Image 1 (cartoon, rainbow, N blue to C red):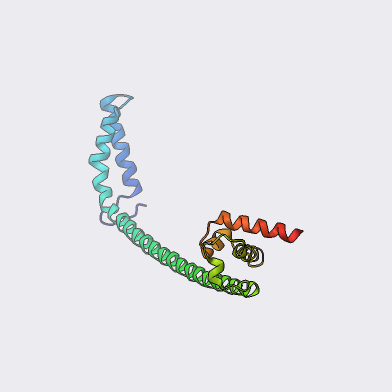
Image 2: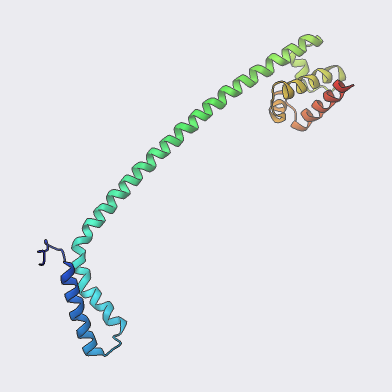
Length: 175
């Protein structure tokens, strides 16, 4: 028993009946091998208008899905931004701690050698200031676990200079 279709709907039985009728007509007119153009024309002329009424539903669903996707993307972007802010805040706290640690360490070494921290950080290459600077670089890298670029930036020197200072102090401590 056939169900009655709602407005704009084509039942499976109708589609099969129409298809069979068309195939019989095409085979009668064109023989065993109907041309593709005739089939395309039939699809365009007959089926597309009938399915157009139903396609409004799928377009609406597609629009709703796109809207949900845009909202999800906005939420993901907000989460990424919040995560970035959290990491930046953490990095700023770590940088504050690092700067504080280096200032404290430099003051301690300066007091031990009888200099001010500014004298050790100065661009002077004299041995009396270079030795405390080497000690600072060694302790900041080994005890503090700081990178050579970080130490170099604090002292106003290149990281390779810091590496050289660490090596010199390491050799001095071996002997």
